[in-house]
Image 1 (cartoon, rainbow, N blue to C red):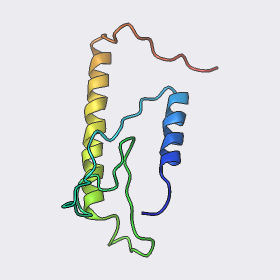
Image 2: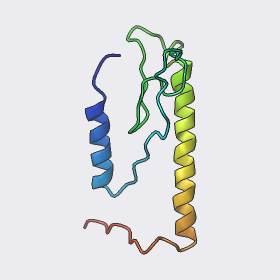
Image 3: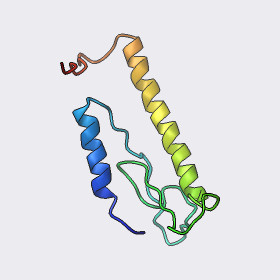
Image 4: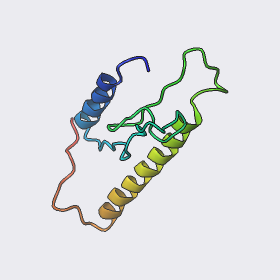
Length: 105
């Protein structure tokens, strides 16, 4: 795997916080056993966000690999569940006493 993805993801987390957004982590353990294959969930091992990896010479038909596509689907379902939980709390008027960040002029 080429490239350090940590700083890129860290930048996105910081940017989200600066804009009053909520960051949702991957919420899944990496596939890091000896029996793991490239097509297992979260093979790249991202905790802070979704990470994928494709060979530089792979065509769009070859990449991203099936494991990364499935990881993206699971991550998308996690974001949908977190969103439903947040919007459900907002719709019922229960926000734990927290006020949303004020908008900048």
